[in-house]
Structures are given as structure tokens and as C-alpha cells.
Amino acid sequence: MPRFLHTADWQIGRQYSQFPPDDAVPLAQARLDAVHTIARLATEHAVDAVLVAGDVFDLQTVSERTIRQLFLALGGFSGPWVMIPGNHDAALSESVWTRAARMQALPANLHLALRGAVIDFPEQGFAALTAPLTQRHTYNDLTAWFDDAATPEGRVRVGLAHGSVQGVLASDIDSANPIAAERAERARLDYLALGDWHGCRQIDARTWYSGTPEPDRFKDNDPGHVLLVQVDAPGAQPQVQRIATGRHDWQTWEHPVSVASDVDALIERLRRLGGRDVLDLRVHGQTDLADLQRLQAALREAEAHVRSIRADLGALRLVPTEQDIAALQADGYVGDVIAELRDLQQDDGAQPSAVAAHALALLTGMLAEREPADGGAA
Image (cartoon, rainbow, N blue to C red; front, side, top):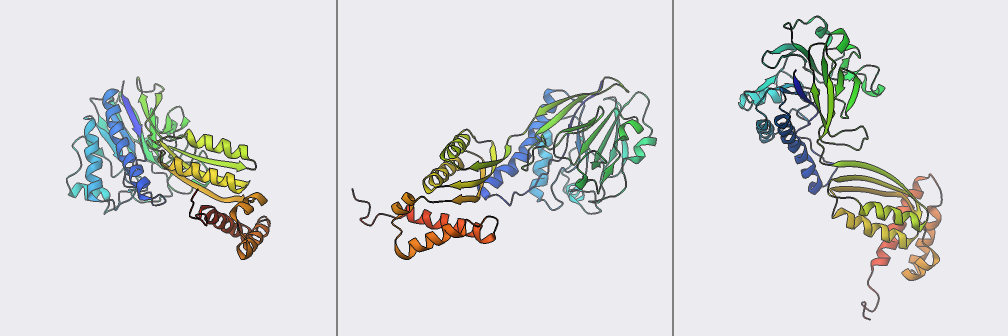
């Protein structure tokens, strides 16, 4: 009755260059922390092995320190780790794996398949059929040999592969590293553990993508899990349980604004965020100066208590009221510029409109923040 943890797409060494360092470093560290979590879960659930279906590393050129940190993280589980390279860390003639071997960093309980092979685990009662990637992109199905592969009698047959199940996933990722949708049935597999798709997804009763254990992008495809899999006997249908592992919650918000209550609602949503949230926010519509300033203040406040916020207000048109402009004391030339910018941004869809909106927000913001002429004395 073998029991496994199925995981993939750790992407260790990924650099979040689109974020400032204060956010990028913790996000990268969370990926390594997820491996510690997986090791702990494997021990707690007394699994017979951890199946890692590729893309352990994000790129071949990760630092030696990162390599050592990763393999030390496996120390939390003393049982077998069965691992294959994926497209990001393919088993090239010179690769992150050959570097790790020269460093003598590979632990004794790691069963690393750099070529397709059957790895037998008689004590645990299963045999692993592996289809590692030996180059970043292949155009033939590397799992085809599973169909005719022999395994010892009485063993649960488990496949590990990394790629795109044909005809099931989005068409734009079907071009490379194909895997036949019916592979588990053809090869008489009891379970097929897949990597490459970063969300947790069931293909059929015996075929699953575990997804990445730590979310890493603004895509709502159910990342942040490992799978606990139990196969009671050869031929039995696997029992699969999702276990949440993700530390951060990546969210994308599209928020329209047209009246003050829309700004109120957005500010309230921002206040409910916490330290695990990574937010990509796009605000569109129009607002006056007072509501824009309230929103900007709320964003500054949120930046202090969430993991990361990327806010795009480029499609939010500033329409200062006459009272706004009067309060800015924008007379003469400055007043004329504000009026011209207001007119320019009314031209929907044109590039000058977006530029004018941004310029108007900057100018009125600067005017609103200036010290009063008397230095602010009461």
C-alpha cells in the first residue's frame, strides 16, 4: 500500500526581478521554505517516497550556495526522494545536476533520474518509470516507452514526467514536451505524477499535475499544493488528497472607479490584506483630486502591511473639480496647463490622453503637497 507525496516545479533560484528587492528576496526564500515544508509533511504522513516531477531549479546557473541549500532542505525526510529534471533544469551534458554531483551535494536518499529508467523500490512496493528532460524542448513523447516497460510483479507502477498533456491544457503550451493524454491507461500506470503546469490539476483518475508548492505568478490556476497519494494495490485507483503549502496569495484585481463610494470600497479591500498577500492592482475610470489622494494614501498604508503591491493607476482619469482647482491656487500659466491637460485626456483611446492623465495627476499632486505661502503657520 505505497503512499507518496507528489510535487513539482519548485523553481529554486528564481529571481523576482519585477519586484523591488525588499519583496523579491522574501518571495525567493519562500520557494526554498516550501521544500522544508514538503520534507516535514512527508515525515508526518509517513510516506514511502516523495515524487518530484521536474523543474527543481529555475535555471542551470543557480549559485553553489543555492544548490547546497536545496539539498540540505531534503534532510527533513529520510525516505526516498525520486526526482527528474524538467525543462528549466534539463539533464544536459553540463547542467546544474553535474555541478551538484561534482560538489558532492546529492544526498544518499536522492534517486535522481537523468535518463529514462525503471527505478525499483522493493521495500516500498513500487517501481518508478521516469521520463526526465535531457533538453529544454522536445517534440516527441518521452513517456512512450512506459507502455512496454516491465516492472517486477506485484509492484505499483508510478510514472514521473514533465511536459504538456496533449489536447487537455491550453493550446499555447502544447507545442513542446508532449505527453499523451491516455499515457496512464496505455502504460498500465497506477499513478502518473506530472510537472510543468504550475496549478494543481487532475487529468484523469490516475494522472495529476501537483502544481508548484509556492505560488509564483498572477494566474488563478490553483497553485500552492502538494498531493498525498495512496495506492492500495496494483491496479487500484489512487486516492489523492490536496495539501496546501503556499505561503503567499497572489491576486489580480481590476477595480473600476467612477464615484466616491467606489474608492471607499477599494480602500476597504486594501485594509483587509495581510502579510501573505501579493497584489497586482489595476484601477480604471475617473476620480476627482480628493478621492485620488485618499486612494494614494491607502496604497501607501497597504504597502507597509502586505508582502507586495503593484498598483497601476494609468487608466484612472483625474477629473479635478472646479473646487479642486481653486483649492490648488493654480493661477496664470499653471492654471492654463491644467485646463489644457484636462481637455487632452478627454480623447478616449489616444496615446496623448494617457500621457495627459498621468501629467495631470503629477502636476496636481505636486501642487496639493506644496507648503502654504505663509509656511503653514496657523
